[in-house]
Image 1: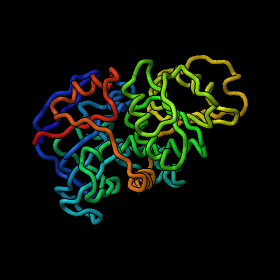
Image 2 (image 1 turned 90 degrees about the vertical axis):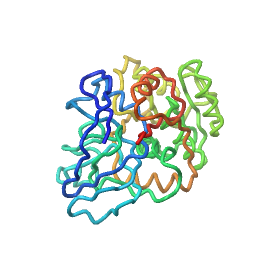
Image 3 (image 1 turned 45 degrees about the vertical axis):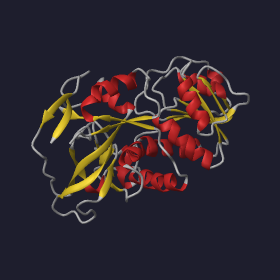
Image 4 (image 1 turned 120 degrees about the vertical axis):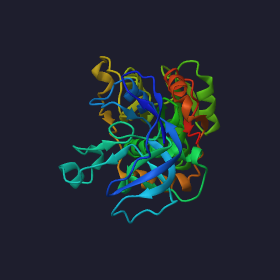
Length: 329
């Protein structure tokens, strides 16, 4: 197999030839056909998440085919198309797992962070955390639905019954959630970096009522807002934009520090909440909704060997929609 491997903080990723891995009991080996590039990959690259162990293969929006099955696995078959998401394993016994909150597990493993991911030709996955995908859309189109989709869905559910919904940071998750929210009959207000006309135009094409810069205010207060950009300075801007009793959802796994802001922005029973990871139910529920809502991802494929260039583009805000790596063998 070949893999783009992160050996130190900041990279660059190094292309390596490795022996094909062998699945342990309860695991499957997946031949990777496509792997989405997520902002969380940047957080791992830049050592912004704790306890990174090197070397590590990034990538957690994996679409591929089962090509080897470990002992004891009865849920998958050879050749089946599966998706491997961010949450790669949970302990099953801590209080959070027992209470149906496996996304908060005390001893989890995360794909592309604490276990090798999909910036490679092959990867190993816990069979319980690999979603059957069927034979619908092409692999590149589906890849962003494995993280941006479920996290977007979880954040949308957490936003509550918001008819007027703000989205701050219109990237992979934002352009997926907009389609689901519009299908639900909500109005979308898309907030982007100042001057990012490409993202604003995409939002409007997908049915947003309004698109503008993050510092602007909509014509009327929002019922809720979701922040996908990892920028803490957006929190007071979003609180300023929502009505009394409204909710602001921080949907990223990492965010820069929140600035000081006046209490009046929170007062009026506004709520500030965060989303942490996803559960398997989030993934399965979202995939059903995505099919019903006919979600179409805006993707750009790149060869696996260009992973460093793609990550640099993502960091500079030059990716419209989602980037997807495709192995060259």
